[in-house]
Amino acid sequence: MTSTLFPPQPVRSVAAASILLAALAVSGCASLSARDRNTAVGAAVGGVAGSVLTDGSAIGTLGGAVIGGVIGREADTGERKDERERRKRDRRD
Image (cartoon, rainbow, N blue to C red):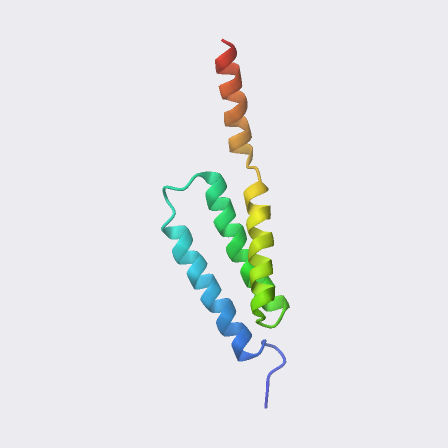
């Protein structure tokens, strides 16, 4: 009897592998800039989401990773914005 509560086995294994890969990649990225880290996290989350939404389709996973990476790259943290404004003020002085 199959359970309707959980997705099929291939989708779960792809999602689990993607999450594990993302965790390993992010933990090894201590020297990356905030923008690069956001890109990597966005791509990982987008890849998992694309995989889950398309039942493990490679095209869906790749598309989700690309879209997530772009969104992550463009995401701006308040810290970075504050830092840019501080540097602009320092240049004027």
